[in-house]
Image 1 (cartoon, rainbow, N blue to C red):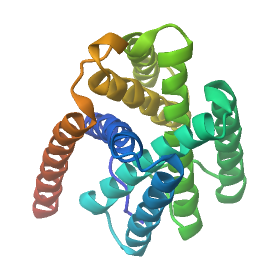
Image 2 (tube, one colour):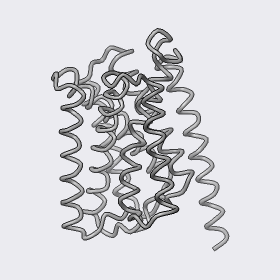
Image 3 (cartoon, rainbow, N blue to C red):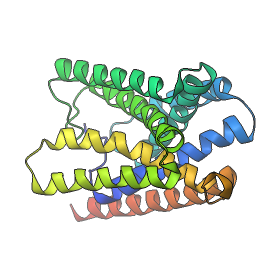
Image 4 (spheres, rainbow, N blue to C red):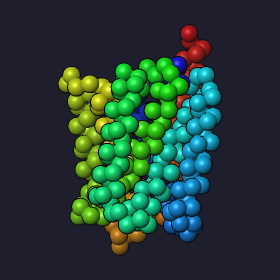
Length: 246
């Protein structure tokens, strides 16, 4: 089942862009448009399930469809996390702990049933379900972690982004210079790119008084959406060239 992209540098750039857009777009719906966290979560989960059905029904990798699902998990994850942490009053630390436990449980069950957590060798429908469930939870977890770093840790938006960026750099070094399992490193990086996107999204949207760049949710979302569309278009061109050369 060749329905997933190659894990390259461009993949991670697009992942960070998509998760950052998910942060700004989720805040745009729930906060700027004042729809609320609960209703926003319901709307965005519906969007996630719709895109997921399309992805599951395909027989090969389609960049537009794949990144639409990634984006839907990011936007839904933003509002779900905010609903847990703010509306339900769980707080960032408790919400993060719940989501970490849930993600760990999903990965353990996935490993026990599919015998592998590889994201380049998924051969079953059940494996796809585990893959996308883990992504949705990891993106929700990332929002909670990002908000915790930005609001409760004292690091602020920029400090949180720098910390997560440093951890991602460490994972990249481990990928090239150690024998640590690439599957483990992938999931660590996948989880951490979400709080990086969350803190970077907050850095873009928040006011100067709150330590942000004051682009707002609308302006930031438009900029990030444009960048993501361009990157997806480039990946489609590259994919077509690869097909022509084979």
